[in-house]
Image 1: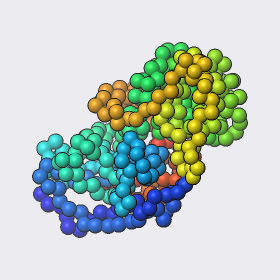
Image 2: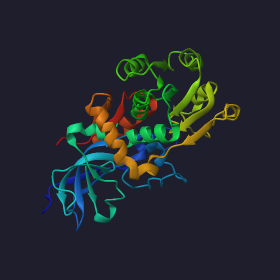
Image 3: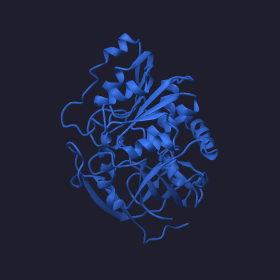
Image 4: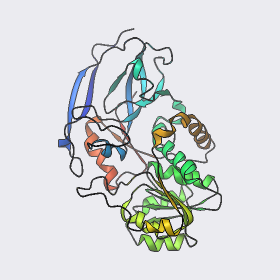
Length: 344
């Protein structure tokens, strides 16, 4: 086995820590020859990369649930790719895999890092990009956040912000399948129409067009039993005014706050948790890694049966990574944001 000597790996590295929104100046582009995998190692050609709001947090220095990306390092990202060279019996040339591939064209994964990269074989017949959405990290986040933290019961009202995004679309569809009433919050008529007409939400509030509090009063007349929060800020505050006794609030993300140059704005209406004996709890998907197969099996079944949909917003070109990432923060993406790095 040998790797063609003509292969060059193009990479995107973190050049500096951004203040506010990242700009192209925060990134550097590098290239290096592609090396052969060592004993037990695997070489993967990156096909698609997942672009996620969490990436903004990884760019910041400071303690978090995962170490920050170091200055000069290739930007962290999960992706799907194809094995093009292997010295590992668990992965054959031609296998499709999901793994932490980072923002680059090729990823050389030594044997010692295979488990840490989370690499596993995937069924390409399910659609490669779905493995970065419903069957990938966003799907796992939505599934375990709703099912383990939210603990939905049939008949309850579930509200999810960022409803047309990667995590939100999964949460809403699972809640519906579990017998809940589902109300989304999204930006723009097209997104709201899509989650109602295509995903089966009972209603969707367009935060760009009107008063979120008024929308919640209209569509959640008996209150909100579960709120899956992807945005934080004013929308979290608005939902807290409508929660029921014993409500569960799942804190998944706060995209409205990630690019602040001032301190993060916390919930002003948090005393509603006290009055309603409610619970607010965070979800970090890595805590459930040993149970991913369970969630994947269940949701793959839903996809095959046509009970769930997986919508991705695919943008072409590694060189477009800096600008594509910004789509997450200005609400331009419609569905799970994915960067196509290469065709097969």
